[in-house]
Image 1 (tube, rainbow, N blue to C red):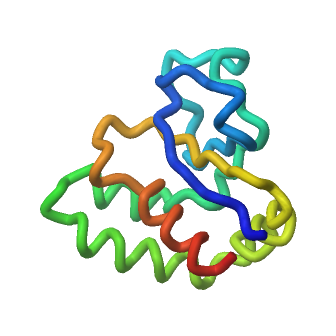
Image 2: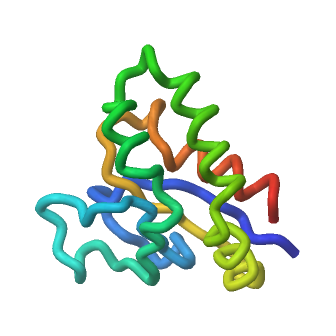
Length: 118
């Protein structure tokens, strides 16, 4: 059975119901200590490249183009296959991110991408 993948902001309280918690940001979130974050793995290599992240800047007008470019990065990223191989037996994976915008962030794109590949 393939894992269920959900997303959650790192600033929300961690819960045992989150399953395996993976931080998917390249930078550690501001103001969050490691104990509160309750991160099982920090998969910064799954995050958008620094250039793409800076270009996007969480601008909703760039959302469609960002998704396309990020998916292209993910298709070329060998870390994606390694991540899937290492976590295919998890029941639940929570992708944890720091962005304020819950509708326009890379975790949404990554969630959809992983769900299609697993």
